[in-house]
Image 1 (cartoon, one colour):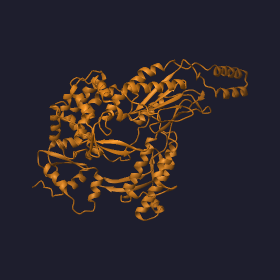
Image 2 (image 1 turned 30 degrees about the vertical axis):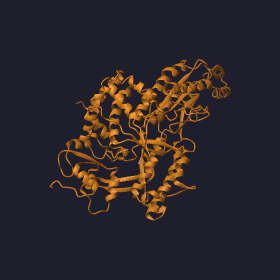
Image 3 (image 1 turned 135 degrees about the vertical axis):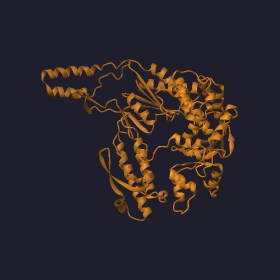
Image 4 (image 1 turned 180 degrees about the horizontal axis):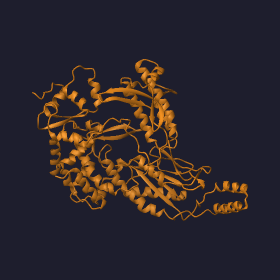
Length: 605
């Protein structure tokens, strides 16, 4: 049987060569592919969340994987309805979220791995959502480079994209490349499995289930049709001319400046240079020069256009017509806007975007002593107006910072770590914002809330908290005032910091995004650890060989807190804490004893 990497590598090569997949269904019979998928999704937070049945990651074993493969081989596998819940949206209302059974998640992940390996080389560079090695920040980096000099932004948002994807259109798109009826039938069954809401079964006639592992990839395959249309048709139609025609007034002033300089009239030279600085060097109304650029992240997209507003309006209408006619989707009227690039701000991926214009910003050109306007036409990324106030509102009562009562039960190290993670997440996301320093006010409010929370916990004053935890930390050659908690561990002292996060703007493409939340001393888990332990098929409690399964817990910290202070801990708790693992390979008898709280057998027994 082929290894997972061999199968996926073969799919990538076929995708690069655009060779249709003919007999791909038999690839799903690979046990190694299922083990790779299991190792990937077992760490997810929702792995222990039940769907419509009591089917979670807990108790996974090799026999269960073999049973799924046998069902696929005989075409008896069926997806179950998802359990639908509603989660609140920031804009008001709720968003439906489907919770599949773990077995369905596992099969979806195997399908996703195979299809992603095939389709990833075929996706356009303009697409950044739900793709390996891409994300919001790669989209913003490309936007800053491609959208220079834009006159108009066309903001696009597809109304209810995930819920309104047409099944027949999607299956027709897939059938062009997947010439294997069994795979297509399996995907269709997943789309039409339905959902349970308030224990009432409902059929699904359109859309990909939100919360499904395969849904983001299917959405990208579907919207790749839009990417191809815009890049292959609209971009060619609305791109012409190598460069703008020269502005005659600009070059007339340039000639007069040269004459004044030859005559030695420096005052006249200065006056003409100041006047020339207010005039563009190119003809901004050149009818023979057009540029259209496009970037998409999931169902949100944005275009930049150099040309008149009337043509930007026409582009918006054409895109809406294509979506409605070919993909059976509609643009959201309230979120699809045409924005003037210099005088207004477009909103994309939580950033405010506009084109800079400052005639008095003069800098030497690279490699020369000639000075020129250096910021005109460049893209500015900023924090949206009011965003900092929105973030700080959580930590204020009126206009004063308050403590967070929900954290008082935790230790000082945990409280400080929570605050640091929250601030780091915001600071790292807005790392490219020109006004990133505005987060300093947010940091001030959070620090006041943190110190008040610690003071409330220990029944002391804020000034004593500062005296107890105040310290300094050097980051990138700069020293910052921070708060620090020292936590003794078996491997030495671990330091939990608050602060020490620079708020300097990071040049795009130079420094990677740091979303590690400061957890430097936690080694990433490897696939071979969990899978090798499972394949060894030996109980890590009693040592019995054969038919072992994996016991999972949500968080190791929860396990430690639950048994902290007790003199006697069960052997399985001691082992999981000692191994620093959220998993334990056990036999069926030991697994039942763990969940029922009964004494566990020992290796001697």
